[in-house]
Image 1 (cartoon, rainbow, N blue to C red):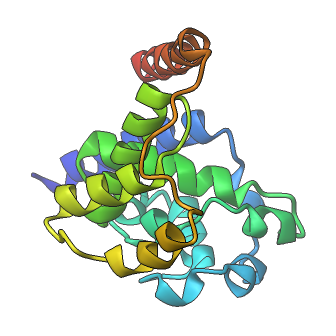
Image 2: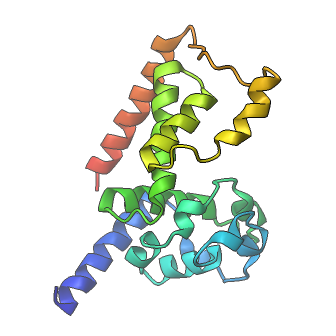
Length: 190
């Protein structure tokens, strides 16, 4: 890829990011409050304010390749702490969505967890924790990871081994279908 082609690709990604996030990243003045308050910031490859800086500079591809966007807990602490009112959480979410679409999934286990979670909620209408643990472990190939944590809960009957399915599954499936249709429509407007 030539330098000119790379610049054009960066410009297209930047336009797509700005359109989809709806966030004016130029308002961020790099105070670092988002990074300082982030509960998972210590585990990120780059701090949240640096992800914001990459977005400001139009280096969306670099931001999409970071593991920080995948480790973000979507707690919105960063957005709440921002003195300029920048929706930092929306930036992280938009980057995650775009990264998945463009094949830049830096934290594959996080993506697998999300897929298993959505599959369970879509089929049962609620979370079934043993199914989440088993599904995540099978999808990552780590069959016995974290299974010991469930034993005390099962012994105290706090964790149900038999799943419970919601009564209004048609309503839940309708909501999921509408959300997926909105997502497809948004992607079609790129």
